[in-house]
Length: 506
Ligand SMILES: O=C(O)CCC(=O)C(=O)O
Image 1 (cartoon, rainbow, N blue to C red):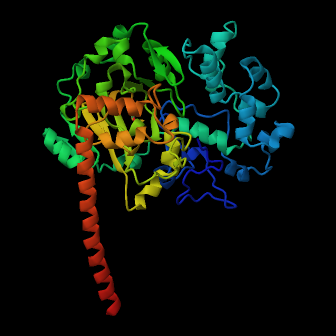
Image 2 (image 1 turned 90 degrees about the vertical axis):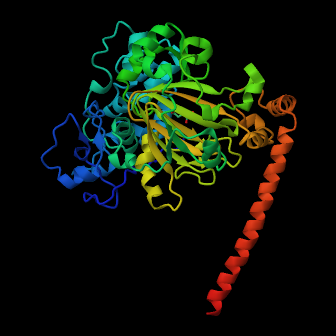
């Protein structure tokens, strides 16, 4: 994960700038619940960012580093309060504090204003809770107060977390950006572009010909109309049917009621996301409330029965939660159906790596911005002038998006959302999947199964036994297509050369 050290909110046309450093005044960020300060001019508001209605009015007083230049004394209490540690970057200070337990963090927060701010950094307390409580926590307005009420129940938690002290003259881009990303509304211009193809009532053949075969995304409307889930799945129903069953939520397991308690209150940059691949086995009633849309009926991994890699997930999360850029596992394609809420999608074709995303050469790891909102702030506008623009849309309840194999995608929930997604292998991507499974670094690449290395042989042999001759037939067809493409590009090259020669001789 990358976090930009310098504050990189786009300073486009912003006039308050000194000494080349980006300057942000908190007044430029307009909270719905806050009155606009008098001195904020209208253009600033239009070009600026809006804060969520629920955003706390300050983050212990932390200001972006550029604002230091407005301070006549040039005094940064971040440094004075850290003593000899002031030469360390903010990330390093936080990394060191991450080794401490809750008691020591609490004690250290009393040493100076600076330690107060650092030691109250919510992600430190989040880690402590997630490492120690393993899902047995009841979220209590902030991570610090959740920790304290779980481990120091005799303490009063009313003065903890975001309602704490406000420190003067503390400047840090890192801490400011972390607060900003947790509290920023999606800008309307990030949601405007809607260039995905939409279809309603098309036949399976049309879907295969126009979208699956050419590996293009499409948004399908009206194909969930018979899903019971669409009518039944509200919060009360889900809590009732799921009872005490625990679901995967990031690194922990949680009961649904406890997760909703968390997601109702959480205001953070990367909200925990409920993403469970075993929901159908855990609560069979959930599995029977939906059926696979007819376009995705063929799923060849099905030949492996219970030994297939994870393939279906229930996904629940609040506004701001989502999935940062990735390509789906094992070269599968996917569909994602929204049951409640709505999701903003940004997709790039396999040959275009999204800006700000850095896959390792073997594809096993991807470095990307710390959060989805940070990607929008720092990289989204770069795609405006790209020739190969991303495919984008907002997928609403009752709609399904087809995500072809190999496509990069990012998803952010625009409101509390519930969705089902399934990854699948049809004849159109069987050869891709087999190629992927037999890569030399399969043990690092293959996911959702313990059989990372043996999966290739197992899958290939079972397909051959179940559908004899299919792999050979698909291989032959692929070779024929390749030869045809080569022929075409020969004629294209002749035409190009001619055109070039013509231009030259003119
Ligand atoms: O957050 C989501 O709904 C998207 C999930 C996703 O991208 C995936 O399952 O690959």
